[in-house]
Amino acid sequence: MQRFKSDVVIIGAGIVGCALAYELAHYNLKVTVLEKEADVGWGVSKANSGIIHASVHAEPRTLKAKLCREGNELYKELGSKLGIKLRNTGMLMVAQNENQLADLEEARQRGKANGEKGLKLLSRAELLEKEPALARSVTGALFAPSAATVAPYEMTIALFESARENGVEFYFQEPLQRIGNKNGYISFVKTRNYSISTRWLIDAAGLGAGDVAHLAGCGFTITPRAGEEYILDKRWGNLVSHLIFPLPTRTSKGILAIPTSDNNLMVGPTAVEGRDKNYTTPHGRAEVFGFIQKLLPGITQQNVIASFAGVRPISPTGDFMIGPTDVGGFYLAAGMESPGLTAAPAIAKYLTGILAEDGLPLVPKVTWKPREVPINFRDLTPAEQGELIRKDPAWGRIICRCEEVTEAEVVEAIKRGAQTLDGIKFRTRLGMGRCQGGFCGPRVLGILARELNLPLTKITKRGRGSEIAPLSSKELLLERVNID
Image (tube, rainbow, N blue to C red):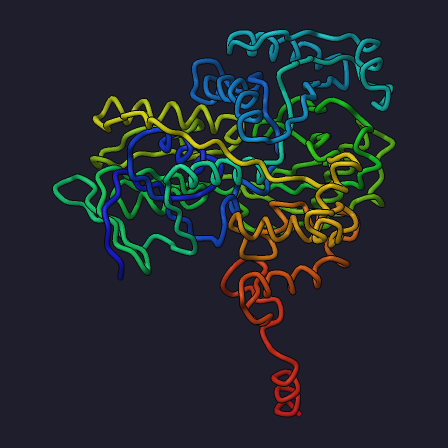
């Protein structure tokens, strides 16, 4: 058991935990992040719609409304600083009959109250001029220009890399076991391998936030809500140029058409209250396509190349849970359902301000190291690609044909922290194309084994317990003999 002290400990390395780490890394503090998974962003953060929302859904004067708008504005700056691509799509909330036009006006007024700029109601003709692929039955739309899309795992990784480069320490596959409470104040946290003395503890554990709070002595219940999403082949990526929203329901923003930052088209999600399983279902697929085809009749299921389900953590308050608790030194960043991704950078600033008011000393660092943005080979000119290949032939060896990912990019991803097949995937897009890793998967296993100096039997998809080839050929043969 290793023991050390840390000024601040953050539980959870999702988008909110990494945004907090990034923000606190600007100050002379020892900051530690504990994550139960093998990499950052593998909980709620990687399996969401990737939308930077306009603040037209949340009720005015809520944290969701305030931090959604502020986070939206911060993303533009962060994307540039961290080298993360945003797709500035804008949003169209579409009415499908005359009765819904009044709801669009209500959403516009709500957005105005939340500080959104440039909101405009569009007639049917104006809407179809912007998006001719929409069904002719639409009657109008609300246009919100500030909405955009981002790859949520890429943003989480970028925040992590920048925070780590500036002194934050991350510990993976270290689920929290115990929180020490001395005279009503946080005193330490314990995992399997570490005991960390701390005065300041932040619960950014996503779906596990309620469990962490129970360990601290102030528990609450997070309700899971599952949502299925379906990704279409890139040839559908420009079917629409805006985010297409229906009118929201009581429990969700509805089933959407999402032009992603990587130029796919994604449709979904569903909203299944109380389900905590991240698998897709025939019923969910039918629900998604049955609805979206009413808005975009040209879409077909035959062009789906991937599907996934994410689980959102629903707060018992109906709003974000951010700030101090009855336990001294224990702070919440919990209930991060939509628009949690959008709000993440604003949440980090907001909570850091609260910590400062409560006595956390924030002395700015004199030096700050900007993130070194990794090279995307596919985005370079032929001349730039040729120059790289001349310096290192590994830049010329394509491992993933669909996404044009080279061996050199895989090696660089491992140097940046990828230890698993999914770690490579989320840093390079390897395996995210039409064949979904059928060609490149086996090849990248060999590179991981070589670079990590591990046998192939130790290479995992997503950490301990997910070994891809856990037995050698000899062991398989012996196992077969024993079976017979």
